Amino acid sequence: MFIYWEKFVDYLIYTLIGLDKTAHLSQSIHFFIFDTVKIFILLIGIIYLVTLLRSYFPVEKIRDYLQGKHKLLGHVFAAFFGVLTPFCSCSAIPLFLGFLQARIPLGVTFSYLISAPLSDAVVIALLFSLFGYKIALLYIACALLIAIIAGLIIGSMDLEKEVLIDIKPVSCCGNNVNENNAFSNHLKEAWDGTKDIFNKIYLYVIIGIAIGAFIHGYVPEEFIIKYAGGDVWYAPLIGVFMGIPMYSSAAGMIPLIEVLTSKGMLLGTALSFMMAVVALSLPEAMILKRVMSLKLISIFFSIVGSAILLVGYIFNAIL
Image (cartoon, rainbow, N blue to C red; front, side):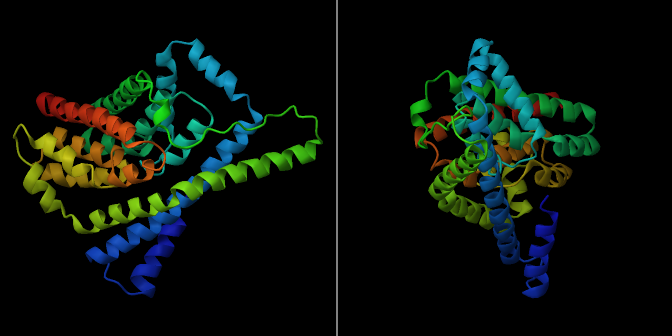
């Protein structure tokens, strides 16, 4: 979808301006420009679409359906839906906000937010091609379990009051007005709602991406290998803590994982590092800061971080 935009940014940075493609500064600038526009487009487009659709569909029935079933079902649906959406942690936030606006239970929305960056078809294909089907299947099973279990835990803690954005009702069809006017009203309400949410969080998006761009450009592979490589018990722990400040998509991390493992890092440590990068990035936390309280962000990061750490130890033990 964004391949032409990426080519334009390549031309702008490396040809028109003439920066060195291998330089840390040019890599950071490229990352910042490309991801800012990409996430802004996703942010506006997805929130607008979800808000518009919500005005036509009785979301109360969807919520009642989920509540009428076993609570596990909604989390399973959300986790598997995350597999179908090829979003990084920051790109998944617009749809996460749309779910909140649609009054989907908080824990279910977190199952999606966790699952989407951890696993998608591209990641599965890359893992399969580089490490074989057993590793790919084990990874996707762990990713789904993390999303489902973490969502269940968060959903059971009565944390809805920690969400800072307003959940505003949108009028549904059935109003006694002209159909054309009704459609125009839906479009206007969806746009007004989108602008309201965007104005509240865009600055945090820019700050988060700027942090991610700096780390992306200036943290070398050798630094990661030095502190998280080797067969020591604390390697996965260091890998998780090193991964959280960074920011990338899972598909973008797979080639790095191949390099790290070829240089001696255990696969479990490498995968826990990757999971921390894609699911618990510092830029994501900066964006979420405008959406939810620090308490909820801390709980989210603690639960998912602990689960990712456990996955690293399990992979190291059995492989």
